[in-house]
Length: 510
Image (cartoon, rainbow, N blue to C red; front, side, top):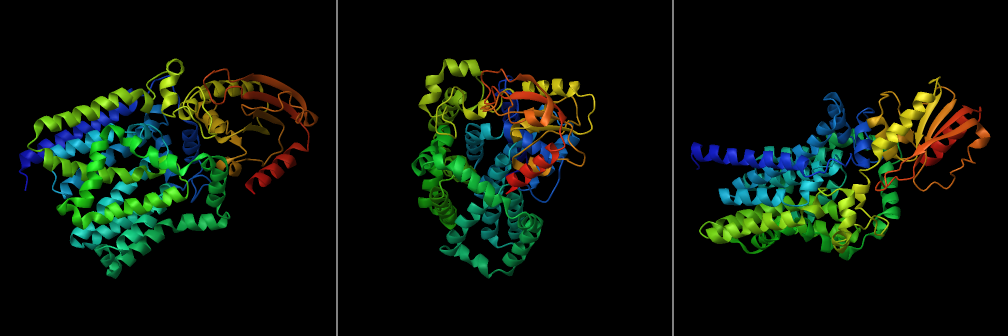
C-alpha cells in the first residue's frame, strides 16, 4: 500500500494534468471562432426545461440551466465539457489504481487522453463529452463490482447508465455490447445477483419520465434517427467508420494497442476480458448500423487505461523506451494539432487546404469537400446574424404580435444567445423550436431569417400576406456555413398569417 507522501505526490501530479487539460481546452481554440451551431440549441433548452426534447434527452438542459444561472458567458459554456473531460482522466487514473498500475502508467493514460481527439471533443458544449465520461465511469464500476461483488457498485453502474441515457441515447449501444460479453464470460454471475435487478429498477425509475415523454410525443427520437439516416448516415461507409477509429488516438496508438493486446494475452488481465468482448460487440453493432465514427469514442478511455497499466509495468525499468514513448505521443500530437484543434484561423486553413484535404477534414456530411471543416464553418457568422436581427428588431415599434422566425435551430439559438434584446425569443421550424412558438396573439410583424441557399430572394411567397417587406442584410462572412442567410422585416401581416404558421408548425411536427 502506497504511503501518504506517495499518494500526495500522485494527487498533485493528477491535479497538474487536470489543470493542463482545462487550460488547453481554451488556449488551443483560435478566438476568431464562436460557439458551434449545436451549442446554441443546447443552451436554449435550459430556458425550456422538460422531461424530453426532440433532439436529445433532458440532462443537457439541466446543465444549460446551470450555465445560465452562472451568467451564460462563453467561458462558462466551454467550461462544462472541459470539466467532463477532466473527470474522464480522473476515472481512468482511478482505473489504473484499481489495476495496481504505477505512477508511470497513470501519467501515460493522462497524456494519451489529453493528446487525442478527446481534447477537441471537450471544447464543444454537446452531449458527447458527458457521453464519453458516462461510458468510462460505467466500465469502472463494473470492474469494481466483478472484483468483489459489492452490491453498491451495481447501483453506481445503474445510475451511471441512467444518467448516460438521459444525456444521449448512444449509451444503449454500450449496453447492447455488454450483454453478450457478460453472458459468454464468468461475468454472467451478475444475473444471479438480486441487487442487479434492484439496480435495474433504480435505473428504469430514473429514465421513466423521459420514456413517458417519448411515448406522449410519438417517439420523436425515432423521427430524429430517420432524419439522420436520410441526411447524414447515408454518406457514412462501414469501412470509413472502422478506419477512422485509430485516427482518433493516433498519437497514443501504442497505448491503445497495448490495451487490446494486454486484455487478450496478459495473465493479470484475464478476469477482465469481458471488456475486450464488449468493445468487439459494440463496434460490430456500430458498424452494422453505419454509425458516425465519433459515436464509439466512449469505448477508448478504458482501453487506454488498460494499455497504460500494461505498459507501465513493462517500461518501469526501461526508462529510455518510456521516455521515447512520451516524446512520440506528445510530439506527434503537436505535429497534428492544427488538424485536431481549431488553432488555425479560417484563412490559414484555406492557405493549407491540401494538408486538411488529405486527411478528409474538409469533407462535410453531404460527402463533398468545402473550404473549412464543417465544425469550423459552423462556428462562424453567428454574432453577425444576431446584429442584423437586432437592427430589424430596433425598427419594430409595436413588439406585440412580433415573431422572430429563423430558418434553422442554429440561427434561432445564436440570435437568442448574442442578441442584446434578451426577450427576442427567436424560433425555427425544426428541432425543439417547433414547440417553443408563442402564438397567443395574432402575428403583426415577422423578422424572418432565410437559409443560406435561399430559393426566393425576392420574397414572392410572402408578399401577398404583408404590407411591407424590407431586407435588412445578409451574412457576409466568407467562411460561415450560413453565408448568404438573409434577414427580412415583414410588416403589416394579414389575418391569414397566424393560421398559416400554425398549420406549418403542425406539418413540421409530423
